Length: 116
Image (cartoon, rainbow, N blue to C red):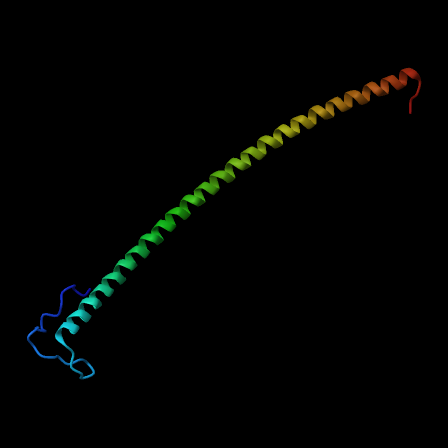
């Protein structure tokens, strides 16, 4: 990682150092470029750190959401079983009443002599 310090090999009293292209560059400009380069590198490292934390947060949220969905699914299945059991009991009661009513009607017909 680049330091935040200016290049100490360039003195303010020194003339103009040469760039890679061979052109003269003022010392202050060279120091400013070095400083900006180190700031950009630090920002890149900070961004990578933020990205890693965000990915970890997303993973944690995803895991919690999966647990919540599993719990909701389990509760829904339990509720469906309870409703199904109650519906079966209700159907059994209605079936019993219907059979009793049918038997009463059959007996009433027999009493009137209307057997079918």
